[in-house]
Image (cartoon, rainbow, N blue to C red; front, side, top):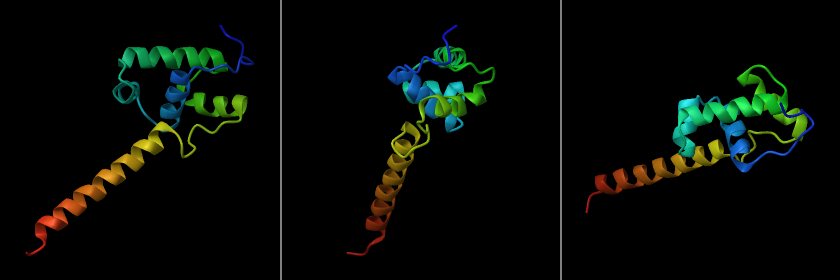
Length: 103
């Protein structure tokens, strides 16, 4: 088991922490990152050990306490996903409005 003082995290581990903080299940994490839910769970298990917590839901808070980084800052995966969806919706709205306009 890694010591809680070991603050080295891979980019993938940071992504998993961000998605856990956003409330994603292992299935959702797998879909977003292109990995299996089982691999997402394995990442979660490693993070729990590394951070010294027993429960998955404790990962984001422990990560924040240990690193000083908030996993829900605007530059996270989820926030990027939200912005992407808003942009797509805006494009859809523009397309629908252009279809409704009279020529």
